[in-house]
Length: 553
Image (cartoon, rainbow, N blue to C red; front, side, top):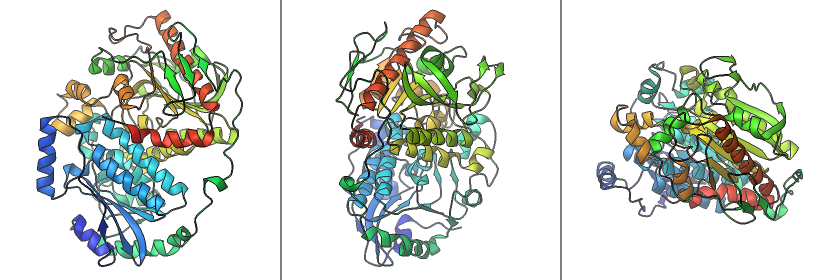
């Protein structure tokens, strides 16, 4: 079918003469001369200055804010400048109490900008969460193609979702899936028609019919936007949190040889100051960190819980496996959810088991279980601890048909909005959407050799170079390490990892040393939980949603 240019789509969608563009010249990050040339070439070819266009207009007399992708600009990929533009428009829509319409057509995160751009999916999603919390309608029209981090975050959070017929709508593009798995997806595995049958798209709508479909929805839902819900002063008080034994809101001393002298006190990005154990840099090669976290004998969630958790009660279908990576007595589930005491602090643990993922990657059911655990924590007024250690979500036809990207988006949105304290531990691998799904937190602690990337370095190499021969170089250029994340403001505290310091190579951890360092990680996480419980809930929640706005590449 013929697909209209964005200008033509907007002309057919909006009431004549009502479109008003909000965009100013973007401020691009200075990364390299080559990237500057790519931006200039994209602008020349597309006639746009960025991959996102924003503004407002009317649909059938209803005022609506539009956030639209310009696919001709670097495949609609979202970098820092595009994310700032989108976020500003969403926040303006919230402030002006206007309906919001997203028109995504994007390959996802802009790989040129690496992990800083990847984290912007949380920035945009948190702005969407604020808009939805204000009782304002959010509509989405998935255009061809919509994939990657965009689909796995803000493009999957609409109150009502329409999609363009026969569009490519999927977690990762077919070329990347084939390169990473050696399998080819079925022809309709990433189609809106398939997602419609799964209940993840509300209607498949042609561009010519979009105006009528949007107007019909706004006729129903936009009426409610005229009456503002109770403001913050009129809201019900946030749920009181269970007082934890040993909680010290005004300052928590961390003990143990790895963390001696570290204190957590009541100021900082999430109201917590972390000092005394914040390495300023690391001499470790990022590719060596990737290899270390992939080592078969590396300690993971099981060792973390063994070192620090007691009174563990598994929730739902969770199973904590036994045995090694290649042969397991019980493989376990890729995500484990449990009630536990972490060094005496009551919490709900949601952890990714690296060994279980040798047998089965994280799928839709696992992410749904994680969301259920967050909701249980809110009901019980218990803080949440997430543990991230994943090579990535399931890449399969079955996962696409069930909407793996939507499951990721809903999981991260639940963590962004839960009223209880949250702490995230980046323990090892942090590949793609499966890692992002558990990252939103009041405080983030990272092992020194842990990493976070939009997708495995092999996948980034395929996107940028159409082969996997540049994998190590991509790992070194994407700003993926714990220290990179700390400099960006996405990680609050870096502590020694289970494999030791920067000079350690893959698989070099000794049993006693690894146990001691894992205990140090657990003590840091428990200390952060104790400190977070003592903070004002409204302040803590606002800081959690806002923390990704402060990222600087």
